[in-house]
Image (tube, rainbow, N blue to C red):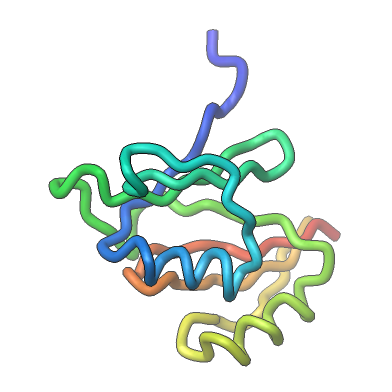
Length: 117
């Protein structure tokens, strides 16, 4: 029945601040904007990630759903982000199949920088 994930979205409180983080600190490029700037999408490979403040009842949460962004070089990505947003980045840790670092956006939404081994 389900054939793919259409998009993953996270709520944010301040679109300008969120764009500065996702585009400036993480290097994402916006690919679609809707609802007078209250919904911005970033196409990433076969998936789409979106930020939004379209629904005032949908609040950011540090313990909700998490998205993992695949990177080519985790150590370089973490070092770059620590220079830009030092409080946002956790330490790199290993699992049997990957390496990761947990990151928080300006609203406290948790993200993962991920690299397959």
